Length: 183
Image (tube, rainbow, N blue to C red; front, side, top):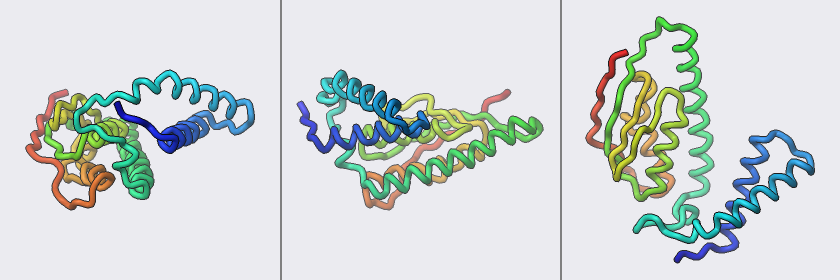
């Protein structure tokens, strides 16, 4: 069984509290109090789940991520979400824009399950793409058009995820297959 330190619990609490405040938009004592109670309750009830390792190579995600690069990554992903959101809005507002729905499969050589989860979630958060499945190193992604999956096949998003866990400069994805679907 893994042990979690006070530091891990503190970082988790602060992160969840920050998310609570951003999502609620209220900064008064009542809402902050509700946040503290809710987050405390969740942390207590799910403490036993956090103690178990579900993957053989699993290690603490907080120890393996570079915090400065993570902050940079968050801003980068927000910018990518914004850009993709504008593109998808244009497609919706101007139906004559060409779309080419596609299914991508590729292998991603990332250091562990958390890195794979982060890549899959980052792809899904970006409008116009959806991670359909992750099985070992094989990702299946649905994309609205070439523009929406460009950051995946040019390896920019996967390399950003790798940079959170490692200083290596190497290709992350391989065996890319693109299947265009008909409307």
